[in-house]
Length: 496
Image: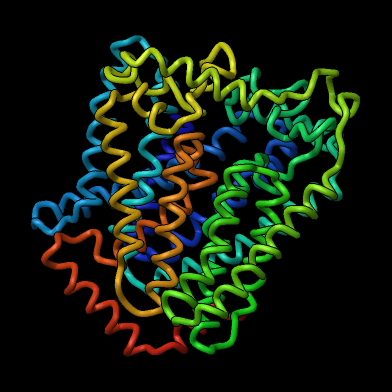
């Protein structure tokens, strides 16, 4: 009760804040996702209380729950007015399927915590998409939130370089970071590789090298988060370049810092996505939009070269790590391929995927209840969903991501609108494909901000409306851009 009452008040305050200050609410949530581990680790070390650290980590879930309640109410009202678009209908349908599985999971004798973890992993990304689409509905909000994301790209990218270059592994062992992972964050002890989580390191050739995790305490969280800031920054650079406008120093700095952060984590899927976005952006901005094909080809090669140099710098400067550097002389885990193989073998038993086994029975957040690391996930986002909610839940999620991607990639409007919608659509589409190899889409620390911004852009491009009102909504957006002119966009993306 002592914990429930304050958390309930936080949820109510979050709902009220979203209604009154939706843009500020969204910006604050992004910074909470970025800075939460710094704040929690400091509180944990200062107080020595694992309970306090756990409650602080839960605060972001409560904030999102309060905002999600507002978004669901707004979506239901729009549905009753017959104004809700297909993207939001799919979001509501997926939420309904998950809600049905709450009592079903309980009847299967699952722990309440396990049910809560499964529900959070499945519903929260969709809730954030709905919050962005239903509550943060203006193009001005999208521009303001882009600015926030670019600043987080700078902060996280720089933190990754500093952490990996100047902070030794022994420091994290000395503050007991392994206890933080298990006791405060509720991860499985099987995920630890002796003294630290196994994914802090990477086997490379005949040695093991260090991966950056910056201030997020996880290389994957850091790298996946930075994909959207990188895409938005690069898109803004080439939008300005194609129109002969000055390039924002914030966008330039965010693109470089985000690329550094992603490359310093040495995370393969984010590196592949980021490299593709950096190469494609000049072609889209200068080739397709401005019809400057020769310049686009030159800048595409130059962008690719810069990214390859950054990646090479990351590999060359990675600290080499030996087992003696860790708290326990355990071998460095190199079992990513083994986990993928195990996932394939598990998927051969297709019956649990059709019927569903209950919330929290698959996925990263179920790690606490797994006997071994190979049992926590399929390394496939859609199989994780199917194992928990049956094939219907997986199909609804595939449809939701597909429609969101198409809505953003096929948008029409001003160059400013397209510089926001096209990179966001590309990121969502590429992440959806990456879901075949990883379950990172369920982790809100890494991709919560991405889903929130995608929702904002779904609204800005008319995706929350039924088809007959989409053109009307887009006309309103473009009229607003014309009335305000480009100085508004420049001011929102400037350095002040």
